[in-house]
Length: 340
Image (cartoon, rainbow, N blue to C red):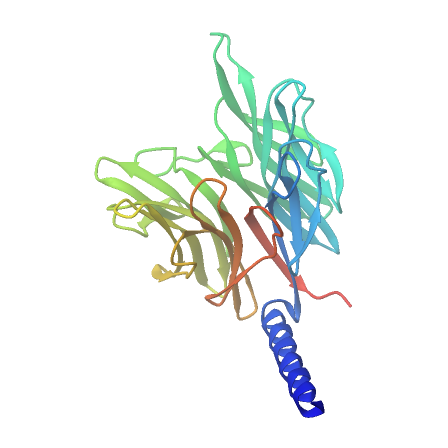
């Protein structure tokens, strides 16, 4: 009997060590932050940050909310997103600093923050706010907040991503802006369908989507010159870009009409890699971050409505984040050295 108990304890110990080893492979030497939405037993989803797979809710679940983008600087955690209030069905653009909520808009019109970037002591947040045109119709106004002070980039449009390089501020969405001025692209449009912008060695990279009469493509622009990442036979999008050591990393999705599945993709210097997920569901890749030799991609396994499982890939190996009861979705990833 004692031998059986001993063997059982050995098996448990080995299993526990294997579990710890798996977590260490993903989170051991680094702090991996993920921003998204966690829907538990509350009426609405929580705006949530996972740090090394431990969730911290930024909201109490009484109102719809989302954490869309995350940036970590000097030990401070900055999260951009939104909170909606039922009393008037208005969403307010939000910035959380170390969990403390700051409203960026006053609630007159719906607004959402999609991206955050920190440069020195300045915090840049990009998104949009609905506006009422003179014609009586509603539209959206592309917005950039610098330390909480709003700047209108244009009458009409949204911003999905912001990046600061030196004294230059780049924003991309329905247009590409540099220091508030629209940048024309040479493919005949100023509408790149941009989801992410990154500046590296003076070159400006934009990842997004492009639609024309031949198809819907995932696309990468370098200094305005476009490169197609997909062939247009399937609906595709490039969602995030990161540059490291001269290599270009882009993540996004392709949607297969034949089986109604979405497939997560990673392109390194234009070479495609499919990211694995549950075979019964599809997968989407939302954000990429490169730290040292490691490539982190955050996204989700997706299936039917309300069937979303947050997933992180490290160097192509997948791991599902803890979500408890209910569904959750991941939007953004940021990686730093572990603070001791």
